[in-house]
Amino acid sequence: SQEEAERRTQEYYAIPGTSEHEAGLAVDINGIEESFENTDAFAWLQQHCAEYGFILRYPKDKVDITQIAYEPWHYRYVGANHANAIQAAGLTLEEYIQGG
Image 1 (cartoon, helix red, strand yellow):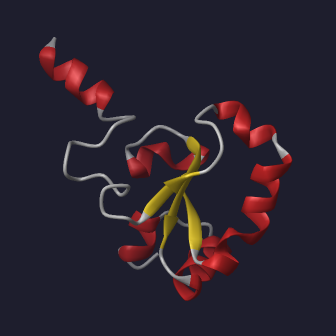
Image 2 (image 1 turned 45 degrees about the vertical axis):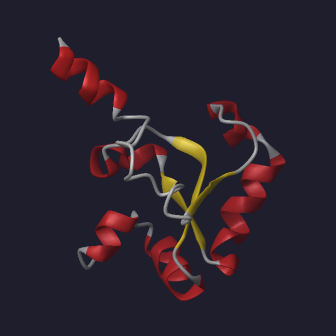
Image 3 (image 1 turned 120 degrees about the vertical axis):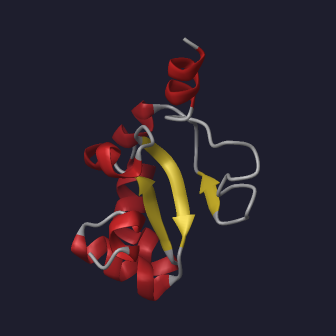
């Protein structure tokens, strides 16, 4: 159905005008493939992204919260203080905004 097609599309693509990329807050690093999670670059990002103010925006184990499919390449800028707090607590941006 049209409704189901739209719902499934929104698991991977933001509605035009609502993308974090369009707002200048997110960046896709490397290729857009799940295999990126098996690279040295991904491992480095997981250890150091918060130092530079970034978080992994759509973690694999939090799809039910973000409502967006896992994207190991998608990083969101939130500032170093917030990024460190989010990463240390193992939260998504949604959880962090709601008070953890």
